[in-house]
Amino acid sequence: MMNKLIVGRFVPKDSFVHRMDARAKVLLSIAYIFIIFEVTNWLGYLIMGLFTIAVTSLTKVSLKTYIQGIKPLIWLITFTVFIQMFFAPSGHVLWNYWIFKVTDIGLLNAVYVLVRFILIIMMSTVLTLTTSPLAIADALEYLMKPLLKIKFPVYEVSLMLSIALRFVPTLMDETERIMNAQRARGVDFANGGIIKRVKALVPILIPLFTNAMKRAIELGDAMEARGYQIDKPRSRYRILVWHRRDTMACLVFGLLLIILIIIKHFI
Amino acid sequence: MHSVSRTRRLVVIALLSAVAAVLMIFPTLPMFGGFMKLDFSVVIVLIGMLIMDLPSALVILVFRSVIKVLIMNSGVNDWIGMPMNIIAMALFITSIWLFTRKSPVLTLKNYIIGATFGTVSLTIVMAFLNYVYAIPLYQKFANFSLASVGLNLKQWIVEMVLPFNLIQGIVLSFVTALVIFPILNYIKQQKVQLK
View 1 (tube, rainbow over the protein chains, first blue to last red):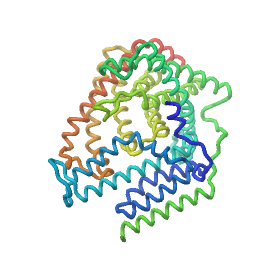
View 2: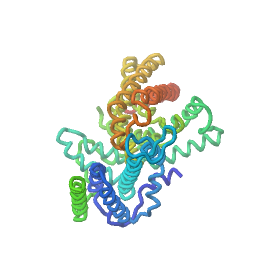
View 3: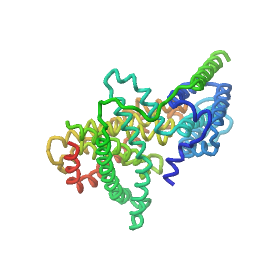
View 4: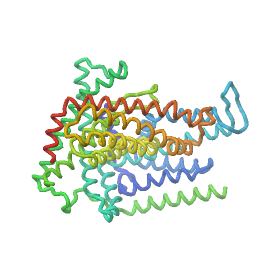
């Protein structure tokens, strides 16, 4: 199940969004969060919603996958919407019981917050579903390049990130396996008091750590043996290319922002 | 420093960050009825501090957060919570480092002093950050105010934020001690390998 969780995030497909440059996708998903705060009325949310649905359908990934992305946050969303609905400070009272008060403004705010939540989650899911973690790491390397001027070790950082990302699935499997091994010996991770449960974690953490150390030292030596040297320029295997479609996507985003600003100030 | 061990250190930092990132996702300990979650990634960061040094540990701390966001982005929660978590945990680790760096061997006494100091500073900083940063930001995002729920900010911090972080500090110190002390010799060996 854990394996699915990590591999399942990135869905390799051939779509417009998949083919986009990782740099463009990273930049635009950050921009999206700022843009959504420009939205203050229903028309804005409608346009933003239609836009987001259009983008998700462009990814050719099924809607079900997106809904799964919302699931882990269902608690937070319900809580927030609940507060919005029942504890609105002002507005025309529609329903009243004890300390609960549903007002028209409260109801409207609840809907807005719900929509905003879902839109932001959907958009950040678009990034993780269509871009492999390694491509995101590459994109971050490019975007960090200006930092080379202040002697920030951009190449080392991105190398470390790539190595770490490469090993996350392996280590997840390993954690699963160690936990299962402990379960087979009768350890119960899900029940008992806090001290008992904390103690049960020690036999997971120690093998996980020692295995990681062993792997790291071996990998480090292997890299050395193949001639890796810090501070020396390296060639690269994966090359990011900025296409016309990336420029187009940025232009569409700009257009969206202009429309939303017009709506905010003139309607 | 010899270049072999520089490469080794680089890879060790990368792999420990990966382990810590995995530990942010599972296994975790739900608290307050699942409303808050405790993860054990800091244990690995602390071991990293013991086999290397404080700067490496802080790098691991930042990396594990970046990696977690890259593989399991939970949106707004991460944007608001992650920077806070990094600051609080950096403080926790630095406190332990301050009290344990002098003696060549890690002693239980120094560790307990460091961990206590770390827990207290973690709790204070978290309360402060919640007050000036997280709650105002969350209110702005979700467009609600705590006051309208009949809670005030101080009450929320005293009843939720303070106890959670106090327990978090104590539990983390406890687990780390349980992990570190039995393998002190192993840690010493690894330290030699990375020199």
